[in-house]
Image (cartoon, rainbow, N blue to C red):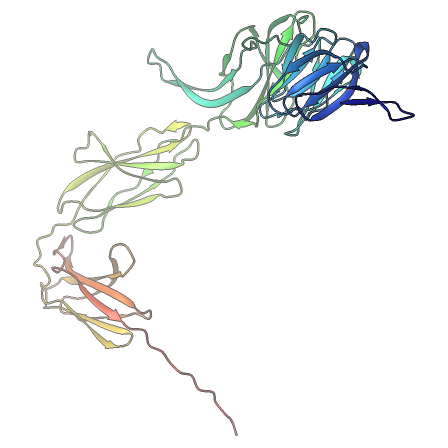
Length: 439
């Protein structure tokens, strides 16, 4: 730094800092000139450029400092530092918020210090205010009673203690005496929720309603009335929804010797995010989970079952608020599988779009069920029913490879599928369209 004569521009005084001066200068009490460098040092200099004191901070001091009658202020990182202007001793520091990344300071009415942080928020600090908790968190949860009394829905709040290791907090004259928690519902007015002793860092809000948006903030109370600013949640949170009511399971519909079809309706209470299907071979259980489907699904085909077997089912509805009671129990019996297997099943192209599936005649009175698998698709799908003698013609318009299988069905009895599968390739045919010319 250089001081020059304003008339002659002759150099009067110089000072060699430990880096480029990128912050200040400002004038502080006693005529000190305060500057900051890119090496992270804050200097207080006399008018003749002699050093009065310096403070080493981290990073580059690109933030603009400020000064009052009692302190020199500089924002650095996530904190505002206040230095005694004559000795350079640290009077206090105040938390600006996570990710503040410094900012420019200015002294406002009542000796408030305003800091325009680099990450956006404008933060106000005052010498005599008690410091707010640095952060606050909230989490909707079910608190389990260790004595076995079930669970209770709550909003679990937590926040940081006021002390910071080896650092004085703003202000030495503050007298923190306790903590105030406020709450609001669905963006409504703030209301006092709880007064807690100083040093408390958690609180369960058990007075919440289900499925309601809540916002919280916390304040340090001061014995002298200099209460801190509020520390807010980063965003409001919804409390846990109402637990779903038990679904209503309809009678089980047998589809084959290996498949039973289930369907159900939602119960009362909260909406289900998912349903768990449970199965047993005994009405009294135990029931074993088979699958979990989305809350928009109200049916399920349980496959891979044993022929001519009785199964029992129940459905559980689930959301973030918990699980419902089990639904009513329904049972179903798979078809028998004692008919003889289909034989000599074949598939052949009749023309570019039609496939004929044929087989040896089956039991008198039985019907043939024809199923198809299109290459790239999962599983087989029923495409038609024919007499026990057949044949059956399938029309397919898209070029692909198709597999077919056939079984006989008579009442609640059926045959195994034909051994193996037949696959037919439908080729891609190209056509030329000629224009029509009128004369």
